[in-house]
Image (cartoon, rainbow, N blue to C red):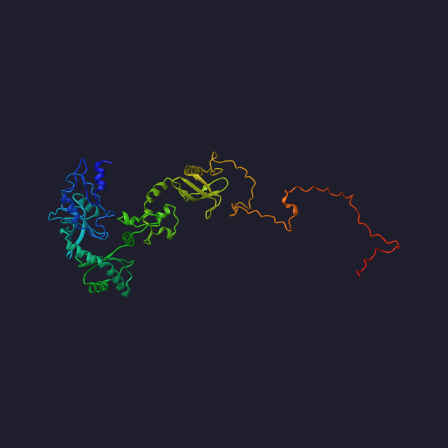
Length: 437
């Protein structure tokens, strides 16, 4: 073990030891990193809202723009102007302008990449676009303490708001509540299938919580993305990891991929069609253009065949002699189908769907037990029954068993006839047995 490695091993956690060929970070930078305020919940995390700064290693990559990107609690981001020329870095907690008051967020991107991110999000600045708000200051401990107090009220506020909505018999579900950094405003995220008149609800909520109320409607997919979970594939939900734009999913995407239209299997945790149905549908559509049409019938000398199913990527098509059910199924490749279609258009009918080279002579099946082939217990070991002999064992049972001598069978001529009883001398019949005295 080298001397440098031994110093690293002996050093306590949290301290940095100098390494040969390099220098440790200055003490002022270490103290600044330790004293930098962080929001509870991890601050800036790597998830679907994370922005990678690929200009970080380039000199001057952070310069050239005074715009910053700030992320808040939910899937909410904003773009602000650093008019005060504050030395901001990625991960800093800042107080930004809001209406009314101020809000607390985390800086996720600075420099020239912010302008590209604004262009991708469709945010325009200047005379034609919206006015960009300012960054007030870096968050002070008092600002973060006030923000944590407001954030601790969010769960209880959501439960009470749901009860109020139920009392008003509104067909809506309040999914989450987000308080502004200064606690003067609350955003209520709700889900509703129909249009809801919540004017009375806003009045009651404002009187109950003494804050400014803002109602924001979200979809079922966005709610599933906020809550998160594990999908049927065993991975985290795509909407909670990397998806930001939700495109409508139709059942035609399942038809193109030959997926059974079972609503229990096609629906995700949001009770809507799975977003992953759209991931490969374009590939299936392009591959299906090279396949024969499904409505075409194939005429042969012995029967008429109808389309049954297709394997798009292997370019195999299965045909049936019955249009409504599977009967006499034959699987051929797509090139053979186009050949038969061309023959039918010319008025010719091939003998079979298969090519002559593909037809194999039928082998005679060996004789087998047809009745027992599909028996579920045919692989079970049969127990052998032991023949138990009744009666006492012979005395010489200890001796080894010897084969019994075979007695010759009596021939019919040599069989003795039954003897008649002898008569007494007096000519009388047989003697009667005398009674015991």
